[in-house]
Length: 183
Figure 1 (cartoon, one colour):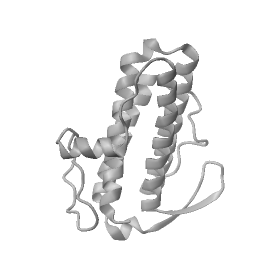
Figure 2 (cartoon, one colour; figure 1 turned 90 degrees about the vertical axis):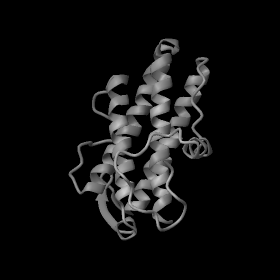
Figure 3 (cartoon, helix red, strand yellow; figure 1 turned 45 degrees about the vertical axis):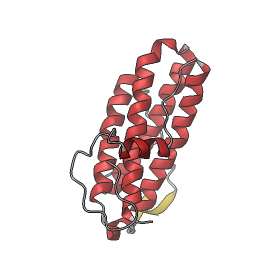
Figure 4 (cartoon, helix red, strand yellow; figure 1 turned 30 degrees about the vertical axis):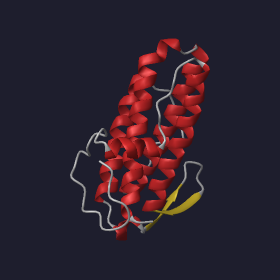
């Protein structure tokens, strides 16, 4: 896979994450207590896995012993951290060269099992993982009469082509492979 689709996926992840958190924040009082707790647990799991892989990508020591926090953060903290992490991933993908994208990294999963993935595979994993669990949250929103945001990648691409998606925080490297980056 060329570098630019990874850039698009990370921008899509940022867009979908931020939109979902905005809908939750605007409707938190409409959610039942048990569903609010489950949504926080799902968002925490997404965030923790994102942080685990960002540490691997940066060559830093892991800060999480499990794919969830030891103590469940409040929604506002989760949303703030998710915005920061999503922006980091978008910037990371923008700066990633094809050579580094295909570089394999040995690491340990939080379970202790050995892992080996390329940087590109890690980006693909966090994108797909977040999509899966945002869908879980969307079901809980629906259950409580809250319409989740449109978060299909086609919605993102349509918004990006219309200029409705926020620009990246740093100018991206020129895209020489694959599709043009979404802005």
